[in-house]
Image (cartoon, rainbow, N blue to C red; front, side, top):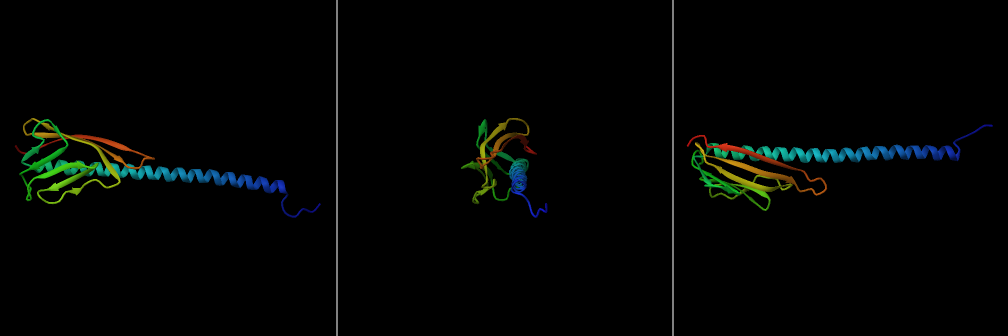
Length: 160
């Protein structure tokens, strides 16, 4: 018997195998997209955390005076004196965004709009030279893949 083409059963089997392969490949692709998004968010969180820590450390180390908090804990850090040409430098959180203000200039957001500062506390360390302990939590705004990092460090004035 001379057969030309495929039988119906063979065609159904081939279509089923092809559909299964496409399904597996699609799920792998979707999974890799999710992983890529999580990696990008994590990178942004780490970079922003690093930026915040560097800015706060530089401000305190270059300051002559820690104005706020004068004692205890506060949600604002204000340093003055030292190498600041425009006056006091202030770091504070408003609306889950960390802002930096140089003297009387307008406050500038340090954190990108895609991230939230969910907690920010500055504790005065009474020592010689004086310093502050800073703790904050930074989180993504994406409710499907929320990630957050806690950061805590201490920094002291270079000179008293």
